[in-house]
Image (cartoon, rainbow, N blue to C red; front, side, top):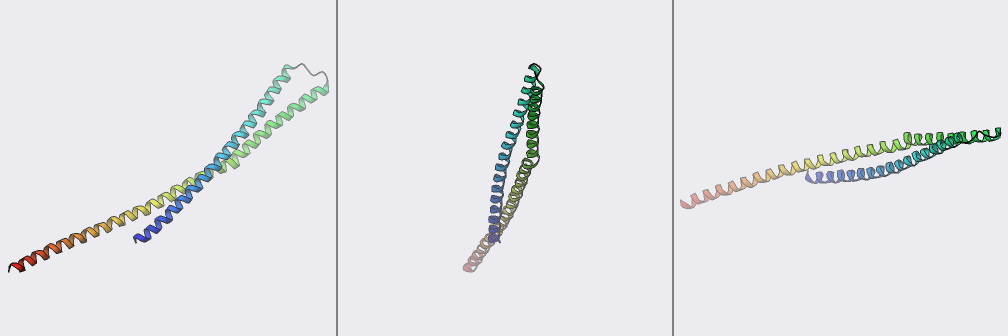
Length: 162
């Protein structure tokens, strides 16, 4: 039985090691996607800042001298607004899909590692209980053997004295 438990413990340790490696990979992916999310958020902030600066510049500038200049300013401002919208959309899509998926996979890997660890510990507890029981039996047998030897010695002494 102990040999079977040792094999089972070895299998459980291997499963726990594999779960640990899967968790490490999931953490690495989540960290990479988190950095990407930060880059996308920074791109949105930069685009937003550029738009805000252009709005301030246009408000401080004198009225356009011609309709063409006014249209060019409006077109430029709409382009900047489009960049802000695109950057926000890309950041939100990444956050809600790729990054959220990486976070979920990391949590799943953490749970798998905890489960593998619990299974290994349960088998180790079973092995310890079996070893304790085997030791109790061995102690009882040694006690019985010592008792038998003592009784045999008494009998021998009685028979030698007669």
